[in-house]
Image 1 (cartoon, rainbow, N blue to C red):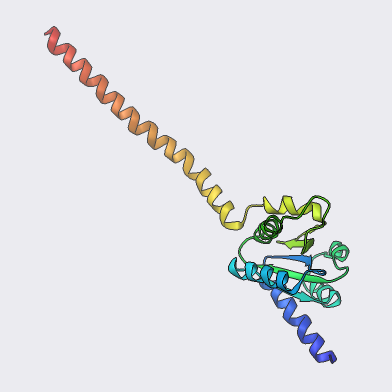
Image 2: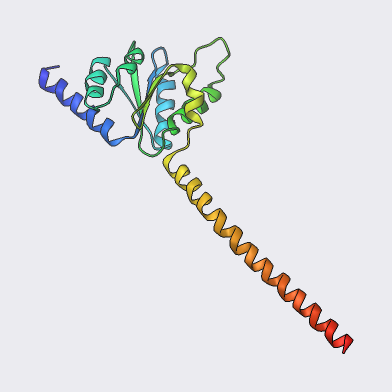
Length: 184
């Protein structure tokens, strides 16, 4: 591969890093071709992309992100494939966990593809222990929905109180008017 081809690959990877708010690094070495194809199919079905890159290309592309990505160096060992996600930072983590469950990995067996690290909205997460935490992260749309729900809650309570209070007031007035008629 000549220098221009290598630079084109780094530029392509840099563009992907810029256009995706989240990407995960995983090691698929030791997986059969059939298992890798099954994993890629699952990625495609969930709107994710999985592609293998050389660690040196990944490092050079990470340098273009502008933030401190030196923690990711721990993940750039051995074979590295990248899971790209545009929508949600937790989608790749959920996909990996679902794939692990479907493969029935035992407790003493390292699941493949092995999670090595993630970059989500300028946050760096390294190590397999981070995967369960990442799967519980809420996506942008989920957080917006929560905020809207919180903002609507007080208004709903006021409207509910006013409407139920109005019914109570009408009931009290009706009862009082009936008492006046009986008394008069």
